[in-house]
Image (cartoon, rainbow, N blue to C red):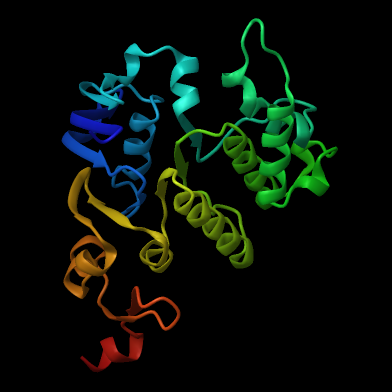
Length: 264
């Protein structure tokens, strides 16, 4: 049984329905990436999987149980989330914010432990924010704050990690560092689900793609199997050529040049 699934999901904000009768299964131990054009429902689906948005109809199941029936701390020990935007508590330092990732592991009779300290230290080192430990989070750049939030999610040490546009605000070097870190987490046995905008990054890192348009899943599967010029044109209205990535052999999307379009 796959640990995280959704069945018959109708997702809506007030009266606006974003997705209707959506079925989704996240393969265990996969690095699943959800792609699609803006406003197609990618982040909405991720919010539903994370229990941040209650489906109008249908249900999300975590380990066979309806996720909304589970205690919050229990969910937080199994599933971590890096949201698209987060509110920073006033005056909080980087170290204190990352430490909040250990909250689900605290008990009445079990307070801060060496294991908590190690998890926080490892998360801060992995995301390259250890040198910012005493800085106030609100004073950091957007890219630095994004890495701090990722460190907090890593410190939670959940077997499933959901990431909503984890490369937002990051320059290209830090984008690759974050995605390489995600790949390492996946190789170590974690299940990852990420929303990405960059098709080439999605193809390079994902083991499983979910392709969405207009609130529906168009197709899903291994990037090499599902990403074709016709799919890119259908989903993104983009003419392109697809060649093997010279580094990885994964699909590399090359958009049709303006001059080629004009000649045609």
